[in-house]
Image (cartoon, rainbow over all chains, first blue to last red; front, top):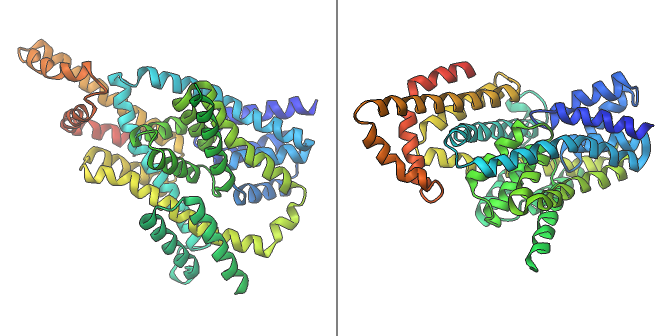
Length: 185
Length: 239
């Protein structure tokens, strides 16, 4: 039964994805391309492209895409459920423990150390995104710098900080303005 | 009574909106969750949000999904968690299903890629804004231990490209080590004559952990900075 197989594969992927969505991609490749031949490697590369360029968490996008391609819409639902179920169970348990024991000195100290780690990892991800966007995935050299993107970035940041605009409007706005500019060039 | 369905709907719609419009994956969505629930609604404190991110990073699965579940759980228990989870998974499910039927055309479309390019500039701005807000506090408070951890963990992740999971485990280990050292110090100070005084000073804070959080945090900062030599050991482990 394809649905059970898909669910079981993505359940395993969900368990072993630690450290964020990108960690799921090699696991998906292993289970879907290498072990089960549900998709070819070139289809898998398309999946990464689509998952990165559509809204939503990358792991979920990839899971849905694999599911839909192999077994239609229901396949997409099954893969999504498979990949989130381990998270749901484990995170709810941790959430419960957190709300129960957050006053405890030991946990407090550990969380105090974890907060700056979280800030650091988000900063590292932010810098990666900024470099990727500014240099369009090429080497970070001055001649590769895209000044239109730099300008859009500066305006977006200014609007965000000055007017506290909803970030979704800022992103859509820079998408529309950028879309017009890049289409005309 | 009428308020309960409202909160579920609000949680569902908030995460639905974020998941439907946010390109770029986990950390961008986390940044937007922070903007929405901490800065706009003021439902969750910044510290708690960082705890949520820390727990999400250390658990399996996508960070965006984990944080959504935790925020929902924090706001309205199990059903709250299901509301935010549903909000997060629904948009990818529908959008990807739609796209998968004509994805060759979608992938090669010039206008689509031009809009994406422009949108990425906006995404970069949003995440930079959030990072600035999150990091600023440590520098304003002159919390040197945290600043050291930020620099260390950032370098490990960005320059050395160490797997995130090891950096997280290092952070946990550092916390455990500092806690054990503090406890040992308390025990030894209890056995000499000064123990009573120190204990008496600390007691009121312990009884009211929530009420007196800021003062206790300041207390533990000074306590920890005394151990900076010891904690260096932990950080060497990390590096």
